[in-house]
Amino acid sequence: MMLNRGKARAYANIALIKYWGKRDDQLVLPMNSSLSLTLDSLYTETEVVFDEKVDRDYFYLDGKIQDMESTNRVNRFLDLFRDAAGINRFAIIRSINYVPTGAGLASSASGFAALAAAANVASGLNLDHRELSIYARQGSGSATRSIYGGFVEWKKGTNEEDSYAVPIDDGKWDIGMVIVIVNSRKKNISSREGMKQTLLTSPFYNNWVESAEEDLKRIKIAIENRDIKLIGKIAEANSFKMHATMLGADPPLLYWEPETIRVMEIVYELREEGTPCYFTMDAGPNVKILCRLSDAQRIRRRLEQGFKSKHIIVAGSGPGITVL
Image 1: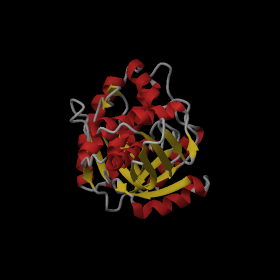
Image 2 (image 1 turned 45 degrees about the vertical axis):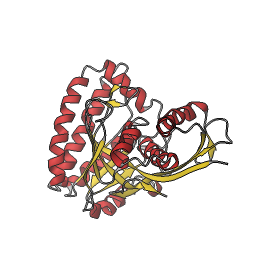
Image 3 (image 1 turned 120 degrees about the horizontal axis):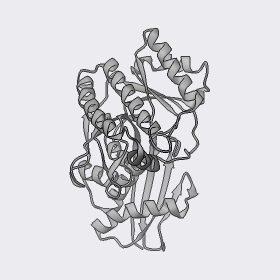
């Protein structure tokens, strides 16, 4: 019996300069370059086994067999590896998400990065990190950044071969995030649907793309200087601009909930008191607070006055993919 097995872990990343919208849906080529911080507290572990005994792909997430829609998405992604390696067997995929799925906490980033890394081992392709980033991108755009740890830039590129992620800074200094899980349920409108709706209907979209590219240039300089205040200021403004563009869509997209705004208010209060911290939100109600890691527990204690402790996660800069 022929078995080809691979297992890997990948960590979620949170975009500070957002990716929102594709110029090519099939190849997942973004409208603008983006930048993120990989986190050490949120990750996915995935095993891929190419097995000649199975008659189709079987995808288990957190121990539960997944429906055909989810399985087909994984199937199409694994075909990239099967075609390149000349493998004609189906696979059993077992994935454990230590990230709430579909709640705006980058579970697809860690999920497809882990799947790519595991499939890379199981297929015997031995792709390097740049090549693996290109493959991961075709599963989920943000997954291209989870190949690496620390601060990572996803270059939008000009074609399918030059749109990939590159490491910017390992983040092994006093930088971290406090994540407030306002709602861990799967969101009603997926990021994929929301991006398309915003791109096609928001009158603010072109300005958003131009502004994001300028934000990227500025934040890279701030990271080089380890200027937490400027990094946070740019990231917070970039997040607001993305959500303003989404509000301009037809119909408007609003992922925030009342508790989302409450977290923002707490961040404003902490800044007034002298603690440099800044929020960012993706396509979901949950809030990520960029801060000095040395300030994270102080911020957590303030948040615990209004939110349950189990809904608050402290994270530092995380590593890139790990083969298990």
